[in-house]
Structures are given as structure tokens and as C-alpha cells.
Length: 514
Image 1 (tube, helix red, strand yellow):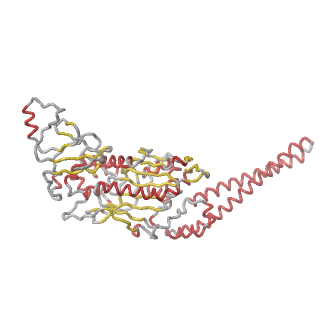
Image 2 (spheres, one colour):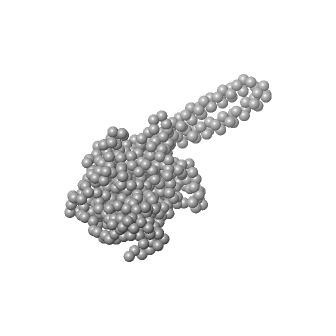
Image 3 (tube, helix red, strand yellow):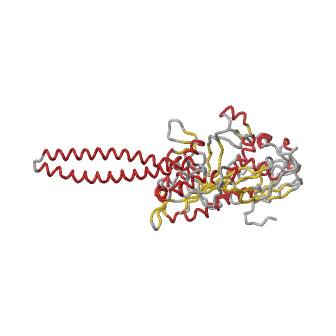
């Protein structure tokens, strides 16, 4: 939301900005809100004058009564009453005018950054940079829902019966990958210095209107019937709302938070084949990052935020690119926005997996998030960015690693516990036609972190018996023999599990990898 003083003093700038966003129907609002602002200031001035006069003549009533001039006193009382009635009338009009001003000001779009390319919609967004080499395999990549179903990891039919279209059941290993991605993204951002937070999943209407435009609200939000509560469409909403009506000491900035939440969205409109499955859904989970900072730091933080997302996807060896959102694709509160898109080998194109936005002081102005600086109070700047949002991110991960048997199989391991689960080194048999066979011996670095540790997983073609001296050998030779005759095992971490599989220590990220 713009400052009314800025609109008053720069109407042509505001109108030109509206034209750049291809919202010409809003141009008359500029003159309308300026006229309402003038009326509001006139009302305030008149009310102030009436109150001063009322207070002045009210003092005469007592003196007149003391002098026995009851008739004159009664005339003054009538004059005071008339002034009071006029003040009440003007005050009611003042509230009405101020409400109209607020509605219009919340509709007029924010001033976009000069670097934003001019375009009508997302088809005119501008590619900035690519990270990683996009690969089209020499075999057909199945539809993402088929990949998940081949692992018995996706049930859309049951979800449709339970909740309708746009919902899903994730099962087994696919559900575990989903959770692993969220856990990895959480720790990734914590290691970047962000404070982890689990926010409320519902917010009040004043927070909703504080963080987004009316058009976005109508297209996205689910309203809780009979209550002043909405289900969040992204944790950014409740995370920025955390600072509503606050005055932040300047020396406590920036506030950098990363949050987990489920997200609920209406996702209105018809969608094509590629947006079905688990691509465009009414419920999903997301790891988000937000920053509240000084105005002069917002550009720097904007670059840091989208770079974090690019880095995370590249640690998973997923090719990505960044797109500068054009003027017509920017939501009304945004100053500048960059989309991060992942490569889809199936579609042979990139698709959106995250969005980074600088909102300037728009949200802070609506929510009254102020900073107490050396030279007085001012509005903070707010930014947000998607860290990762499965299941959409799972599409990118599965498609890009479908031919990397070891990588995919390792990601099926349990990430939330200290022990990894050992499985055969081959993938699900239903995918054998799409994936080359796994090599018998492979050493590689696992691409995710458990806490601050990187895991090394080793596939060995030779049967191996634990030789850790801290673990006594079993006196049962038959048992030992059975253990030695088992299929190849994976070793990872420092002791042994119930099956007798060795677990080796996971090195620190700074340790050299041989």
C-alpha cells in the first residue's frame, strides 16, 4: 500500500505505474482517492474548528447562569448542542471517507522496481540465468503420478472420495521422501542462520488483508464459516503477521525466519494434464523463508533469498533457472519478484517450484510494522521466498533422478532417525523398463544432511560381517554364517543395527571426501 502523501504529490507516477501493470481500469481511482483525501482533510479541519468553538462557548454557560442570564445561557446551550450535532455528522462522514480511502489505497498497486521488465502476463517473464545442465534422457520418463504409484506411494482415487479433487494420499517411501525433503529444507535454512518457526495455520481477516491484495485473497483463501479465521495459503502470511502492530528496535534487524506449514489454496480454474496429479492441489506442505529488514537492506536480502532456493535444488542435482517476473505478473503488493523453475525431463521444459518477492513497505504499512531508528520511526521492508514445496518439488526430484538408481534409492532412506534403513540396491521392479540397472559397487555422497552431517553410503557387492571390536561376535556360528550369506548391504553410521549391518560415522561437511 502506498503512502497517501506520495499519491497526492505524485499522481502521474502512480498512474504510469498502473499502466505498466496493465490495470488501466484502476487509473480513475487515483483522482478519486486524491479528491477523497482532500475532503477528509477539510472535514478534519472543520471538526477541529467546531470543537474549539464549542469548548469556548461552553465556558460561557456557567458565567451566564451565575449572572442570572438564564435565557442567554439557554441560547448558548442550543448553540453548543448544534455544534455537537454537526461534529457528530462530520465525524460519521470522516469515518466513511477514510474507509473509502483505505479500500482504494489497498487496491492501487505498489510502485514496481525500475528493473522490472514490462509485460502483460507470465508468458513475458524474462529468463535470467540457468544453473545445471538440463538433460533429456534417451528413454521415456513416465508421468509423475505414475512414478509415485509404481512405488505404491500415491492414492488419488481414495483422496477424491474423501475430500474431492485436488487432494492426495502419499504412502510409504514416497511419503518418507516428502518428509525428508521438508526436514532437509528446514536444516538447510537453519544452517543459513534463519530461526526455525512453526506458525499458526489460521489467521484473522486483518492479517489476510495486511499481507495480500483483495484479488489474491478471493482466488486463494479458504474462509472458516462463522469465524474470523482463514486457512493460510502460505506460512508467509502468518509469519509476517507475527509482527503486526509492533515497533522493532533497529538494532534487532534483520529478522530472518524459516517456517514449516501446511498450505491451503482454492486453485480456481481449469488446468491441463501436467498440472494434475500432485502439481496443482488444494493442500500441500511448504518450507518458507521471510525477512523483515531496513529499507536499504531489502535489495541485498532479495538476492540472498532466491539464491538460497537455487543452492538447495542444486545440492539435489536438479537443474533450475531463474525468471524475472514482468510487471503484469506481479501481485499488487510486490515491488520485484523472481521465480525459480526446475527442469522437467518429461515435459522438456522448466516449471515453477518457488517464488521470491520483495514487497517493500507495503505489508508493513498495512500491518503497522514499524522500526524505531536513530532518526525516528519508519516502516520496515518485508520479503519472502519459497525454500521448497513438496509434492511439486518431488516431481522435479523424481524426474531428474529417475536414471540415477543409487541416488533415488538413497533418498528412500529414513532421514528423520539416526539410522538409515537398509534395502536391496535395485529400484522398484515396475520401473525397470525406464531405469538402467544399478552397478554392483558404487560409492557416492548422499546429497542431504542429517543435522550438520553429510552421509556417505556405500554399496558393496561382497558380503560383509561386522568387525567392530566394540560389538562382540555372536557365539552362534550358524547365525554368523547366515549373516555372511545375506545380500549386499549398505553401511552408514557408527554401530550396528538389529540385522547386523554396520553403520559408519557420517563425516562433518568440512571433512574431505575420498
